Length: 216
Image (cartoon, rainbow, N blue to C red; front, side):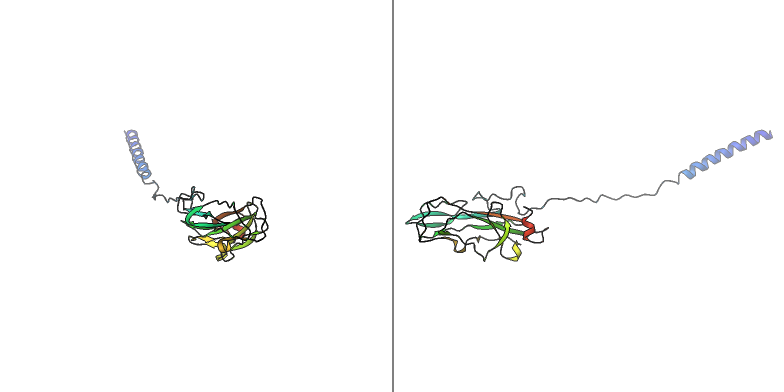
């Protein structure tokens, strides 16, 4: 009988021990907490307010977003004289009847519309005029540089603020007096040209206009 009671006691202690182990195990879960996500969204900026992949078409006179480079339409008025339209903007003019000593009006200009960030502004002038025709860049608006032009011409940077524009630039002319001087002894019959190009690039990330030009 003693053995039976001992066996019963042992079994009871085993059962109690099992209960005790289960109870202790129930208190060992890790304390924890969670947070919501921190989300970062990155969207590329743009020079102009329109779609950065379509910042305006300077060859489309109806599109006036972005960097615009145009001039007013020239119309022959007789005796070697030309007049410029007050409103019609074009990207090309042809002068077929130049006479010695009769100056030719020409008013290429740039402007910006919708500029979002500070930017360096450049023009390039490719001067293929012969002796006797003279076009002078307006140094009040533009400063000549020693940079290499993309089309082999002379590169000019905007004359103010180290070449940086910080807001939309109104119509800013390129040639002094908006004219091509025609010498009295001008005799060339060869077809010649005078071409202009405009460039703009964000100022952020460049220490000066020379560094900025190298990023085109």
